Length: 161
Image 1: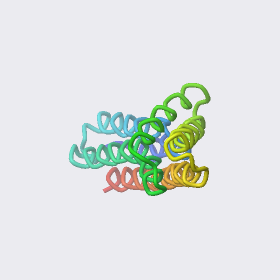
Image 2 (image 1 turned 180 degrees about the horizontal axis):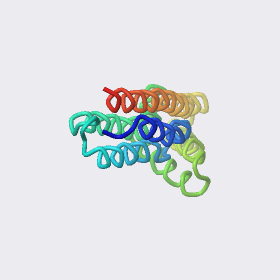
Image 3 (image 1 turned 135 degrees about the horizontal axis):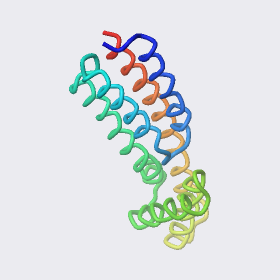
């Protein structure tokens, strides 16, 4: 069994992951999962069992799904077409490369706005779809922030049982 102070130390080391979860497409969950894995290896998965480690891995996968789909779901809810969603994803990636990490918001928004305007020639519809992408992205960030806190909370719970 690892001493209590090491469990607390590992939980504190995960704290930047919570902060990173406020920024879309940042490796918050892989970072926290890596820390949990190191803890598990040091503890020989005595307190953090492989099943519990798998639960934390499930949260990791869920966070990726949220990161990559929240903006698209918001845009779809706002009326974006499938083609606009594809352009939006391309804009997200380009924005992320050009202006990390916040370029993903801007790239997604602009790509959907331009694609929808080109498709409908209606500024209101294009702006509604693009705004939906921002709303979805921000909602996804909020969900990921909560998930990051759940991740750390579960890690501590599993490690101290």
